[in-house]
Amino acid sequence: MTDRRKLLKTGALLFGVSLLAALPAVAQTQVYDPKTRKWGNYDKTEAYKYWRKNKQVPPAFRRQVVRFRTAEQPGTIIIDGNQHFLYLVQPNQTAIRYGIGVGREGFGWAGIVRVGRVAEWPTWTPPAEMVARDPKAAKWAGGQPGGPDNPLGARALYLYEGDHDTIYRIHGTPEPWTMGLNVSSGCIRMVNDDIIDLHSRIQVGAKVIVLMQGAALYKGV
Amino acid sequence: MMGRATFRGLLAVGFSALLTCAASAADLTIAMPNWASGQASANILKVGIKQALGLDADVVEMGTLIAFNGLDTGKVDVHPEVWLPNLNNLVDRYVKGSGTVTLSPVSVPAWQGICANRTAADKIGIKDIADLSDPKKTVALDTNGDGKGELWIGAETWSSTAIERVRANSYGYAKNLDLLEMPEDVGMAAVDAAEAVEKPIVFACYAPSAVFKLHQIVRLTEPPYDPAKWKIVLPSEDPAWLAKSSADVGWDAASYRIAYASSLKQRHPDVVRFLEHVDFTPDEAIDMSYALQVERKEPLAYAEQWVKDHADRVKGWAKQ
Image (cartoon, rainbow over all chains, first blue to last red; front, top):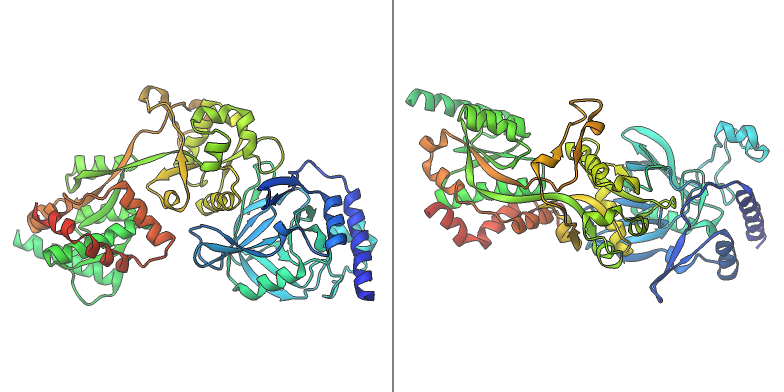
């Protein structure tokens, strides 16, 4: 219980910080309601309120098997940053769909990469510029050990182009309510349960397709 | 004559041994392209020729230029899909020029242009190329919140991508759509993802292609090709290509045919008769692409089943 309160408090703090940050214009997240078959707006306030009330993300961002017709082979990951969905292609034209949170400016890049390596409860090392401006990050300049407060969450999938680390990761998070939002620093975040599930199903080397989100926002990898 | 034939035979043996390390000397070598319908048809020809004429053929994967060189020198006997007008320069050189390569009179019509999914066509009303110039419609294609829609126009390496950029400028929809260049797998996965949540999407496409069987796809209507309005300078020809180009009409009709080494007319007139009667339809080519790309069928196993399912037709190709 103590741990959870601590987690929530830390989360609220981080949440507040990201609310203060000046955000460039990005696509308003919309959530699809399968009952009404309509799309409704979904923002940070809504997200946090929903999480506090339900202790889980809205149905659209929960892990589920969906019909997904594609020529890509089972085991391929397809990331739709605009809809905030990550698909893991399965046999018989289906996929497991997970809700994701993406970067503040949408996703920032697109292309075909692969899972180069994976880690359980990974260490997080803040980038030098974050260490310089943020005393909390400076504390972890040498690397924050894995654990419930670590921004990378329970698992990390490191995305490579050929043998080269792109510096982008698909990872867990201590802020599970941020699914469906544009809040991270360019990475793809998932609820810890979901990244543990995804990690258990994929092979190192898996193909990852990151979809485009407009010429203004993507750089080819 | 005998000496030349023997020499050619030796070369063919050496060539296939090099490529396949196979000990057996096949009667024929069929070039196999790296795209799905070509892989299926190369194998269907192999299995069909074996069944109808009793001849063995090696199927060897190779690029188009190497295949044409092989057809010219007699190292390769058949190429299953020669696309026109894309390969007009090779046709000028080897078919019209040296005469060492012959094209089958039967052609499979192909198509390229801009496609929409049913959501874009039916709910947003994007059915004609002119609809792309209506910002009230194309805002529905926005995926990054800037009020402009996005349109994938092809892979960076394709010459068709540069031409799609010219067409977007000439028609005017480049003003209200961001034109995206990405590998084909990314473009197609975007169509898959849009279909999964019933969101509209518009994209550059060509037929035959598996996407037409994978999803319900609508081809946007366009003014027909007019050579007087088709002024294309490619980036490889001039840095100012975009300013110097214009094309506000549809693509010229494309098609593909089987090509074979002209020397087959003497060596194997029965094979020539067979090849000149092979009549794949565009729908069959889509089925072939779908079977290999989506259902991941192995090309030879698929070909064996195809020939079994079309036994009378294959027999007919040999007999006519």
